[in-house]
Image (cartoon, rainbow, N blue to C red; front, side, top):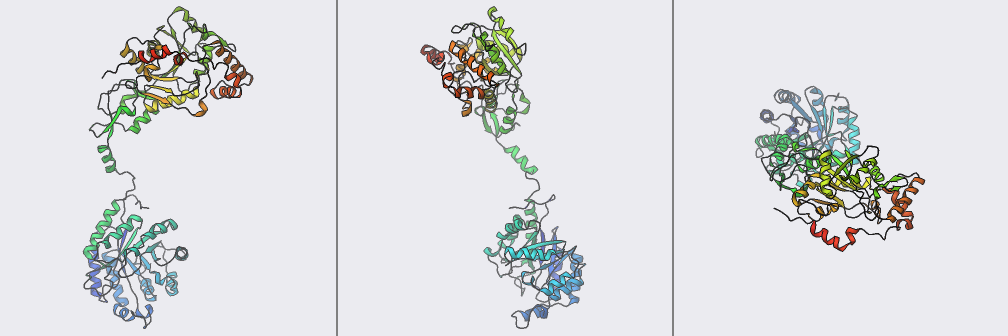
Amino acid sequence: MSVVFDEGMNPPYLICELANSHGGDSAVLQNLVKAIKKIDYPRLGVKFQPFKPDTMSLPDYEWHAVYKQLYFSPDVWRHVIETAKSDIGDVWLDVLDQYGIDIAGEHLSDITGIKLQPSVLENQEVCRGLESFDLGHKNLIVNVSGYCIENIENIVAKFLRLEPGELVLQVGFQAYPTQAKDTALNKIAVLRKRFPTQKLCFADHYEGDQSFACRVPLMATALGCEFIEKHVCLSRTEAAYDFHSALEIREIETLAAELTLASDCFSSEFVSEHEAHYLTSTQQIPITNISLRRGQLVSEKDLIYRRTGQSGLTKEAIDIRQKERFILKTAIGRHKSISESVFRPASVGTLVACRLDSSRLKRKALLPIQGISSVERCLTNCKLFSDVDVVVLATSNLEEDSVLQDHTLNGEVEFWQGDPHDVIRRYVGACEAFEIDVVIRVTADCPVVSPEITEVLLERHFRSGADYTGVRNGAVGTCPEIYNAEALRRVLELVGEAKYAEYMTYYFTNNPDIFKVELVDLSPELIRNYRLTLDYEEDLELFEQLYMRLDECSMEPNLYNVFRILDADAKLANHNQHRQLKYKTDEDLVKALATETRIPHII
């Protein structure tokens, strides 16, 4: 888990721990302060360790004699602290004993914060001393190395009662030298999760003469530590104590510079301005692989992806536009990007093809089904299609078909008369008259054509960028088809006169090298093996019974209710099953459609 810095990308606070590398020489201590003053870093503090041998240990402790050597009087500390406050700004004290409490109390107004090592967290002399301080504007760093999570929870609760300005938890223990596996970086994520309101400080004690000693703090910063503590000395070879893990001044300057750079690696913005510019300037964007015509949709097969000096939409943006039912308003040449300006909203229209010249069931469009003509039953369902701009009853310009104008649902449906034989030409004429871009093709012999299936097909048509969209399998008479008006015009351009135009589906499914064909697998609830088209007397009898039962049950004639009735009555469902679709069973017609609707591919 990486840290995201606040606005301004502040680097971590760097505490230069002087510890005991001075060897008890106050002049060395002063020189260290002067050297740290020159470090160019925006968030810098210096930390001292004031202690007294007798309050630090008993004479039998192995380091007691060294503590005597390292001791400084209160006057020395007064001068050092005042100088550091003036030259550096932030002064921290590492309180180890009662003497440290005394020095801290004397200079409380001059110090920024206090640090407690894990070895003194149970020192009641130190704890009572801290309780006597007003820590409201002071930071308190508590090193919790060696403690389990449950103990740390108690430690946090204990020191929060002192109400410090900030309680910071520190990881990293003083072993000389610290091994990589003991740097405790793995604790950072655990502590951040368990104590999300506490800031973390990292203090490593890796060998100072190793380059990894400067990398570990960078890693801790990346993991979320907002404070870094590092031992500092003038010279490792000359320092008597605490030199193992200390960085020399030039090294601490390098670390400070790298911490600044590391902080720049974490931005408050997930995508930076330069990152966004890089992506837009180098991203391979969709480029047309072929020329596209006005009125087409864009499909994946139309595109290749290249770097280019052209500006254009991403594939995702193109998909969003087409999902919103936009279509190309201008032609686009080959190897061109696709811009926002080439799209416009598509007009979607339902064209219902109808003639009164039926041979098997005379004037079937006008035959009543429970008192309402079959064509009006069909048109009523078509009016239920969602987001359709216009519904048109498209018939021939022969006088005998003019009577169909009286069956347009009292004028709610538009009326169009065109070519009596070439249905594609008739459709193109209606598209031009009513400015239709995308056609929902329905034949009037389908009284229960499905709005539910229509919605599925329209969504897929725009999403896939097809010229033609149909179903792979569905109940006969329930499934419309979707065509681009441009694709219908293209058929006429390529073949002149469309033989077998009433079977216009085949001009697309037999020419996938010319047209973009999308075939949809419907979900099971939309599929049955029923015959729901009107072509024979048995079909009419089935519809009569079907609509009678729908009326009796006050059920809307939607697909689900139709299936519900037929699923429950196998006898009714099978009433017309012996009747076959001519274009699937007439061998001569099948062969003719296979050859006559095949368009020679012209490059």
